[in-house]
Image (cartoon, rainbow, N blue to C red; front, top):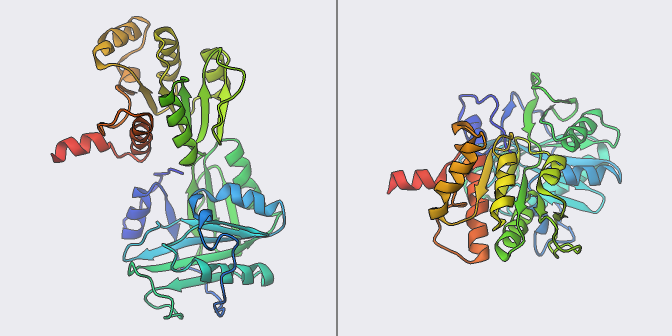
Length: 360
């Protein structure tokens, strides 16, 4: 999720914007004290639930089974491992997300389960000013969390999930009891906070060699909706979890996928004609990142051909070639790390490679 909408002047808002979120809140709602109990999640030994950063898929799954509890960091003091706006979802046999380095998740689940039972929202404080001094935060942060019960027929939640399915931004405003969600920014009322959501980031990888497979695999593992395109490739899809395989002509595949402002394209085809077709489609599109795998010495002639085909400086300025951050590695997953790192840097407005050169 990546948002930079209306940054405020407070330290919390600046940090939230840097993390790709835009949160606004006024006076947090008053909470209800609950005695901490024992954490009993199925994956307590290994917090696999924390690998999911986007709460919306888990929220949809939880609401399909009944009510869900949504826990959101609404204020943060003194730093912390998770930014304002980080969320967890609790439902029937569902725990997803994380809010700290493991210091508070067990206690938050206790309050979330209680919230599911009585429907009363909670405002939890950990760290300085907490009513539970036995729960220590090793990072020294002060974390404020709003826990709210979401019913399966909640209109704001339905709007949030519908906008996600349509790949549209969403703005969620809630005080734990009253909530709204819309495609355009809403004005928070006293006691409410605002959180903005972007569509799920996507990565489209073109190619079929080990490097392309590694990029697609890492993209899927890092939370991207991922497509692997290989025209006239094998009928059987590669055994890569979370990767959608397409083998029709590139112009058809890219057109049906739709290259929007939250889609990155990695061209790794090793075929000059296919690469050219892909670049001619991707560079003029709203896709903010287009990378090309290939030898640096061939770039001038490839760029000259793109210019001759009608692309201007604006479109060509988007091209990242050779693809990926210069990490020095050439093995498939080394290149994949460099590519996914560059995609993330571009998405967060952090040109990591340029910054490193300036600092050198």
